[in-house]
Structure formats: C-alpha cells, structure tokens
Image (cartoon, rainbow, N blue to C red; front, side, top):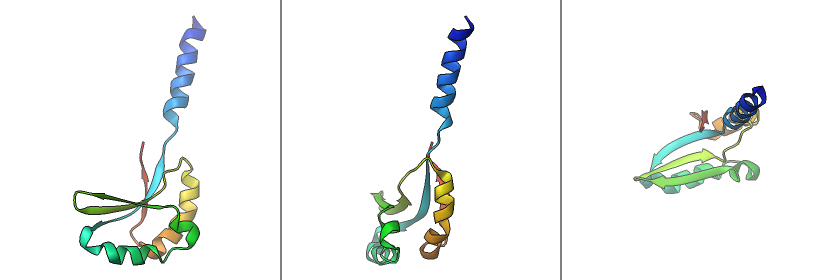
Length: 93
C-alpha cells in the first residue's frame, strides 16, 4: 500500500518541480521595429541567437529562449542589461 502512495508522490514531485525561465528584455510598439532591430544587433552573435521576438496586439515582445537553468540566465543577465537595461529573469511555469 505504501508503494502505491509513494510512487505517484515521487512522480508528481518530479513533474511539477521543474520550472522554465526566460529573460524579459522589453516590450515595444510596432513603430519602433527598425530601431529595435538595430538594438538587437548590438548583442554578440552568440547572445543574438538566444533573442526571440513576438508580435502581438500591436506590440513586439522581446525575450530569450526559455531554459530550466536559472543559474545560466543569472550569469548572462549583465550582458543582456548592457543593451536592455530593464532586462529581468521571469518564471514561465
């Protein structure tokens, strides 16, 4: 009986313990799309590969590729803040 309770508990702990993080770089209106492109070009090629944009409801949302490694994002955050000073780490799930 103990095994039946313990196994689902272990599985649910594993399933819900992982979180995904991203660095939110900013939200811009569509009018500034050209300027935003120039700003993103200021990143190194390696960092530029991690930047994503999403056009929704007249705005451009700029963020990084999601990852489960928050420590890695903490190390990269100063580099992102050199270009986007208000960048911050955000939990997705």
